Length: 59
Picture (cartoon, rainbow, N blue to C red):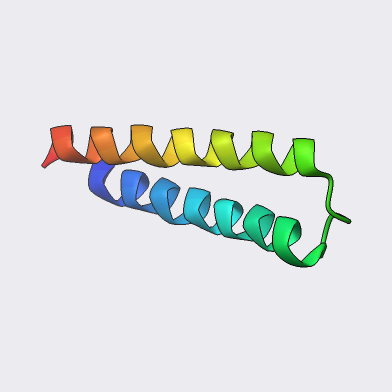
């Protein structure tokens, strides 16, 4: 159960990171707010790292 939760959070945080990276590059869907994009990408990266660390501990 814990493996699937951590893998799910890694996938979701990578999707969020991709959406905000797309926003920086193209300006879609949030009209290219650079500060918001960078903060959201840092938060998503931190969540992905923490999830990966927990996944290594579980397995």
